[in-house]
Amino acid sequence: MKDASGLARDILHYLEFCRELGVRGMRVRRERRPAPQPSAPPPAAALRPPGSGTLFDEPLPEGETLEAVRADLGDCRRCKLWPERKNIVFGSGNPHAELMFVGEAPGADEDEQGLPFVGRAGQLLTRIIEAMGMRREDVYICNILKCRPPGNRNPESDEIAACEPFLLRQIAAVKPRVICALGTYGAQALLRTREPISRLRGRFLDYHGIRFMATYHPAYLLRNPNEKRKVWEDVQKIRDFLKTPARDRQH
Image (cartoon, rainbow, N blue to C red):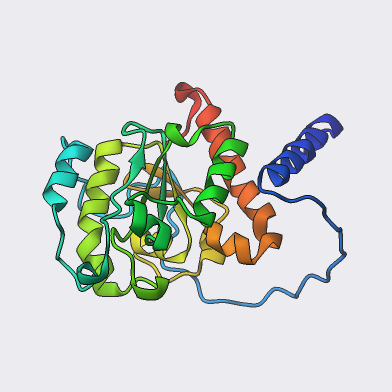
């Protein structure tokens, strides 16, 4: 249990995080906690804790650069999304980042500029990164899909299947210490699970030997600002892990 000074520090950090995310006032409301409901156990592969081996038998590719992956992607026409796109949204940021964010799919602003997370959700993600004590250029940001789905609809399975090999090669090229999956589809696609994001978030999982944390998508937070506290808890764990000296990290 934390002492009073530790608790006060956590509260201060949380208030600073809320300020960074644009929260200007908060009300405290006492809520009844629902009785716990029994649920089926999640797939073992999806919830394997860190240090228990990788999730998949096939290793990630090795020896590639992001430039080589992008060149191989080319003017991609591997799925049905290409006729309506304006730009392929490959990814941006530090090619050797310790922290890699993986979203779901580009939106209208991203399609227009060819860069990930540049719209309202992207601005919120930038504030989250800054609240962690980092800069946007310190991390690497990409999506499961490289092209915008019409009307910003959810990614479909054939589209994910077409894009996923390039995402895996991006992960292998960057070699991050932590992957933070933003939203349901980013987490489910990488973990090969249908577990909802509400059950996946909040704890480190293992992804090919890389620490993996799922959390809510910034676009979801724009619609549900009351969930910002949960995202703060998730990114605080990532921040604390990255601050831990390498020799003291558990793998």
